[in-house]
Length: 626
Image (tube, one colour):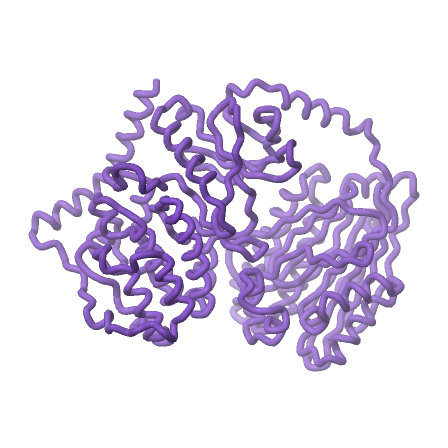
């Protein structure tokens, strides 16, 4: 049963449409909404696996505090009981929204909603063998305080149509969606691709789930459309914009669904349109305490760890923590000078007075500001800093490592294009006499706008420095899968060190496996010193001989036998059909075991003592600081 304090749109509309107007006294509501919705089984399906929902309180004061919610879900048709998964997702999300504390921020509310929906579906599948593996997309839109907040998992979409212009507000968590971001395929090719239904993220398939979050200021007469792929895959954005903008509200869904059906859609079709009829100005008396807190935070003394709400150097408004490490934290911040969102990296206070940390921060900032390339993280020049920090462009997306955890191996054409883009970035870095020295999938961001960025120049150095070595412990010691042999030995490195790392990444992208495997970092590094990886074509026969030649050429143990430059490697990647196959795979040598009993024992001792050495080093560092 639904509480009578809430208006409910029928959740499952098969071949029907529903027009819903939300009554509210104009002076008591900040936002007046009208909603229409329709769902159809479609011409080729036996059952409808889409599910829709809309709620908002009937009490105006409650509506101001809580807002309204619109939801759409599309059960995975390739698995059984997709209709059950989508229904559970929507009903659970609606219940979570209704029962949540109205003061809970939308981002925290989305975490509750998606976690609860994911748990309900996953547990239902575990309890019933016939339903095991069922999953769904889930997109939730919260309308509150003149703003739209979106939580999203899967490939259902939200469009904004404003003043005859259309804008997509969600990203498809599908493999073709990723290809589109990277500009590997066109929208037309995506619609025809047999990978269109391959999701990279969904609700219910795994014990944990994370959702995308987006926030948007609304305007009067905005129209938002939530829809499933059975509709948008057969209608282009221009046609959606024309229909949503020009038709009467109750005509939009029937028109678009009929258009997709005429074009032969092979899936269920669902659409929900929310129109913002009116936005009232907020009551400012209720916001006085918020403004007071903001002014108080702006004048706080910065003799403490940076935290959300602080104003750094009267310029950067710290909004939230993005990441914390043992040495520093990265924050999302608003740059008052430019109005842009930026990322600010600040070392922890106990390291600010440490000469080594200060030198490293200074070097990272100087190196970052020397580079200007579309595939390299952009640094900002900020003079007169009150404390050490670095300001960088704010990136939204996910790392190459995250992608490979979901799709392994990558399609070969995609892997080659990604490696080519990284090569072009390395060409620019090396021309500016910079060696990254820690190139790995975790340091490559696939941005939401389809571009790539190489990040984290914490241990990068200029080749003009007297020596480029890895003597002693370093941040790379914990991730040896992409280290070049000369790094393992602590010898001088150069541009070819980065080429080896890129070759190891390309090996993993195309085979689905890292080049060397072992129970601990020391065994992996020993394998890299004494032998070669398994030939790529043995792990993935679809790899061409020419591509295998490029990978093994980049991963030669001796630097002088590798590509002399990243430009040469990029040339081969761009012209694989011209690559001369020399039979490198025939000369690969298996890694050697430790040659004496003492070496084997030493490996075990080193492996056991590694955590102790790190702990003692950290303790001594803290004592020296005090």
